[in-house]
Length: 128
Image (cartoon, rainbow, N blue to C red; front, top):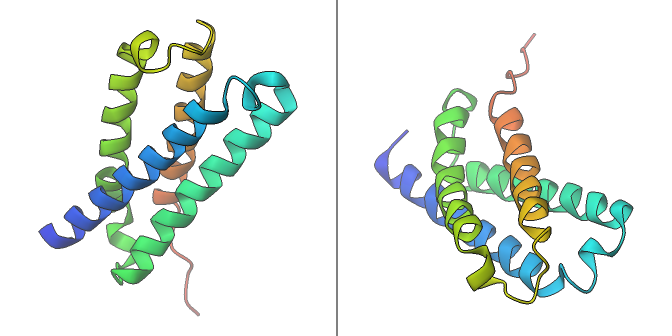
């Protein structure tokens, strides 16, 4: 994988993480965390969106399947680093959310990037 590919995967991953985190910050207190089923649905939708944008970036960069794991690492590192920062400064960055939202945001991140890791480790389809 080239340095240019790594750069674009990192940029795409940072943008997707920022959009997901801003969505969570805007709607967690009033909508997302009101019911468990809605929180679960939202986590699944965000994980799907992250997977979609990872695959979109891979297709736009014409990345072969064998380079998906390093690409997922480049895609995920900015989001994981940003999430660690948000978790460390949660009370400061999201003061309107209750303290239990800290764990919910952490779970939100684990689910989203867990799905990304599973997709990156997916075995390529065998050709006949």
